[in-house]
Image (tube, rainbow, N blue to C red):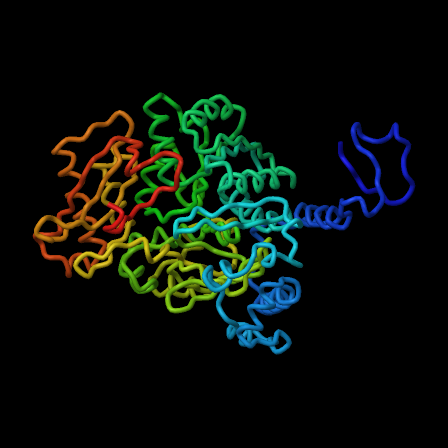
Length: 530
């Protein structure tokens, strides 16, 4: 039986939906909550196309201070957190004051306060769904949200579907290939795509999750009814889906495939490789990566402009080194500072944003930095590159700031004092001599032999139906070493030549010890994990 609260004249029982009864205002349902949701949906549906966004520093400052005072006034845990740090909220009047606020971390905030106390007004029940973090850094965490929080993230999906995929102009099938369940990716992505449909986009969602067989069963049957098919998932998994589909005769090139990616840094070589196999011919517009966390949903996203700039930097490693301070290429996205506000501190990122658990100056331990729109285009100009001219279309070139993300610093391994990054290994496996018979998944670790000599070990997952051999192990090892020497100056200069060749092991797809199914893949292991 359903119970609803009605204000005004009570209708006749014959006019009520089957199974519903009317109660007074104390019956448990909050009419104000429904009104807030309805108003937010109406505002989202009426909002102008996302490409019209621009960076207004004054509006950002006002919005940032409003966020702080709203959280300080309504979130019990944050009030106590500020009190412990000797902060009087009334004294926070400028952005400079804001930048002096204490940093939030999982250790000093999340784990110290009960979940409900970290919600608005201390009311967990005001959220309608709870996601669970992946636990990639240890203990899982819980992240509740309400419909209004999803609409802020749906705007990031709209930016991709509108500016990159032109889904406002053509029927689009969105195939959600993120894992479904308590993890944030699958249900959140499905909800955001449905919000776009609610706004009027001709988008239809199917959600097989990360069930490869189901994806390959339903997608070829449904795709012919649409002008384009968007696959949403983690990069190595989508590559596996596309590769397996090719072996089974799936005609990806006839489906107008587009990709929405998340969770991992990938190279432009990877984008080109997967794009060629899926029949994607517009690298800056046919795929886009999301930068997101379970903590607050999607924080930023690739745009045609950011991809155009990143592809230039991939061709000009000296420019990438000058811009990022490292030879490896990070994920490069644009973000809406009115929705998520980024700061950089000591080479890592902080962000502030409203959600089911509002976060203020939250340190997410991601390596990266922030650049304004003007700083980025000015940098490109110094290297005689005009990304706007190269892009050729204003759709997908918002005047928004950039954030670059290398990932979590603990995803590296140290070898002879050199930091070895998963992206370096991935580049080796993406070369033409190797890419055809591997999935792209691997585990990077440093091992010791009986004499305590250290070796770089890479365990690689073979593609479906492929088998390992000494020749293939050597090909993979040589390709990885070549890319490490090319991309990682520390490796080239710190590691003795006799120790530069990695020890490669080839394992069949889905190996339970290194590549178990159904869990988030870890690309590095410390010695104790072996």
